[in-house]
Length: 144
Image (tube, rainbow, N blue to C red; front, side):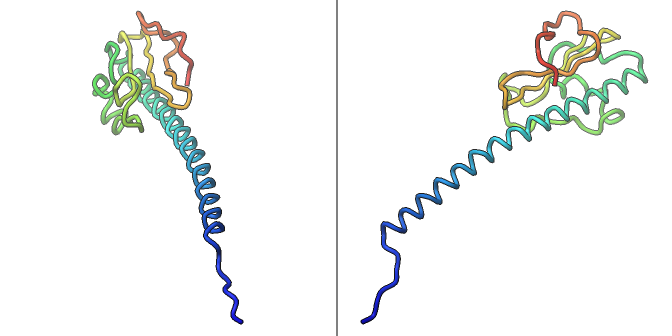
């Protein structure tokens, strides 16, 4: 007599269910790692913009005089002498609908602040000069 050595349908379904469960756990942790990586890039981008602003300040003697808006709109004086190109937010859209970092300064030596929205904590963080830009209420925001 010949014996059939094959898996039953129940055994195959159990194996497929286990593989599906394991893959969903791996994908969930992978998404978390991706959001942490995007946040790390945002903070790195802010430091790169800060370095360009400080280099500009050393050469010109003041910060670029702009209000509160997107970095790419207001800091065109930095490209290409102080920063080769503006870093862009790695996500498609931030909480306020923009895709860029925020910059605020009254110009001169008053100071500046640059903001990024971190998706892991769902909050804004800032990098600023030693003094607050006049009229800003960003002092309560955490530093990156």
